[in-house]
Amino acid sequence: MPPRPVEKHVHPRGIFSRFKGNLEAIAIGVKYFFDPKRSTLIYPKEYIKLREGYRGFIVLVKNKCISCSSCARICPAAAMKMVKVPVTDPKTGKQRIKKFPVINYNRCIFCGYCVDVCPTEALYHVPYHDIVYESMEEAVTDLESFQKEPEYKTAKEGLPVRYIVDEVKGLVKIRVKKEGGEKK
Ligand code: SF4
Ligand code: SF4
Image (cartoon, rainbow, N blue to C red; front, top):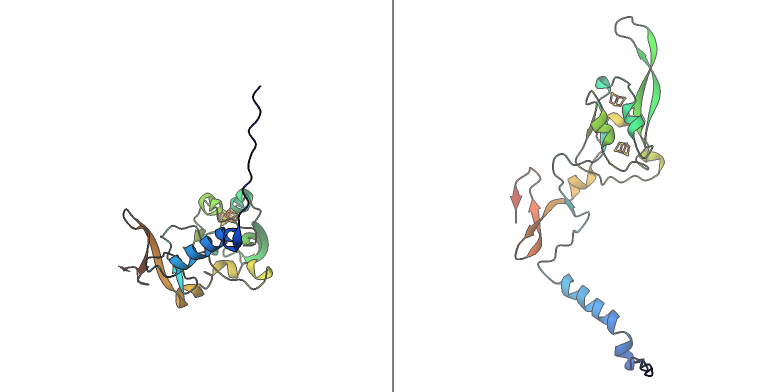
């Protein structure tokens, strides 16, 4: 049996060799920092304008809700639950208890099952998901806040952009007018 070849371990020599990988990484970062074609999203000065139909935050239209609980039952993240609320029956004028959904955005994964399953279209998505909450409690809606579209501060302060794939340039960031038109 021929002797096994002895592996030679090459030790990097000099300070440059030791930090070669780090220096290369820094050089790449600097190169792209000054590259006018870089496609980094400068958030929150810029934000991605999402298309209509995007599964963002969810809003309840209370008068369409028939309290079937399908939304809470289908939720895979246990983010939606039903709460009991006293309501006045418009026909009899008597008070009765009705159930409505509320949502915990600490748990929601924005799958949209609840919106899809609702038989009366009492739930709908807004096309954004980057809302800032200052506490965990704030991200849990009550019935009143679940009926309001969350305030989208980024859209007021930032510039909307979109990314497109260009066959030559690759990923290209495009400035989008707030009203919907596009400009480079
Ligand atoms: S979007 Fe998905 S995770 Fe969020 S409340 Fe609806 S069903 Fe639950
Ligand atoms: S599925 Fe729709 S109608 Fe049924 S409880 Fe949920 S929101 Fe109300």
